Image (tube, rainbow, N blue to C red; front, side, top):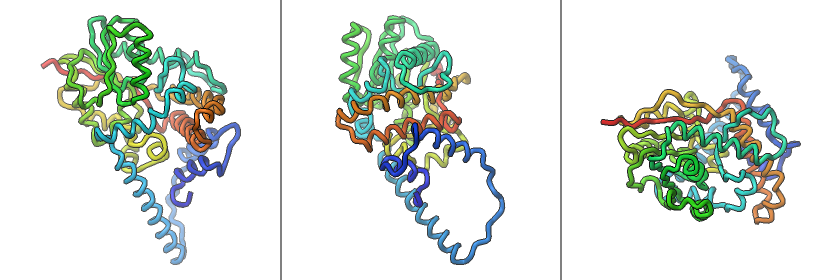
Length: 365
């Protein structure tokens, strides 16, 4: 903790060096709130020469460790080759694992609740399923989806968006994934739903897709792109979108005022959960757009819905602890994901990070 207070606190929890009952979220929430509300002192404390030297070297060591962690993260930036490894290290942990905490839609992104739960104390698969289906419907409305549309989904997950859209609109759908586990599971889901005539799933990096589509959807995939590749991501969306076509994304967002510091550093999520992961900011997104792709001004902020989504996942995660161990996952792994869920929930709850549904239109000319 001396070397990196935030990362040290997290890693100490993973190592079972501290515990909290009923879980670490209350403590993390308290620390986040205290940091936001504590006034910054403008007074400079007088210290001895020896104290100044110690402080200098301590600061130097901390900065060196921070640089090392950042360089580790940069090494995992999302080239076509490295993206495959980054996705494999998270999404290919096993479909059976994800089944234990997701709802029946197998959706691993922020839901939208008709009424925000005041407090989540136990898992509720039906509540979570309803929130996920509503989220998809809101995105379909943003796309102005019609029966005649052929939609490309970049990062199609376990294919719930495709199944729900085709059942509702009878449109055509092509999904892209580079997760082997998702690819196999999604193909079977589509077959079981009897929708193979309308839905195609490709095991393909989005940068290699050559088709042109009426609409494009991408749900919380942009976090696997990276700052350096944002222009490539939106350039590819433009290439794959017909003139006059609409694209919609759902994105986890870093606040604009924190973005430069965030993108030039590492943290617990980048190091332990999503290698190569990166939250863009709204400003970074707007600056990455090609001239022919314009962002609509009506982005829907849904970050406050992510806290209960994560809380529901975490409740299921904790309730299924024995089953997770039976699948071969260690106590360290279980605590790591618990910390991931509760940390992100606390950050969303206090507005330190956000999520938005954003639409784009390609010019007709």
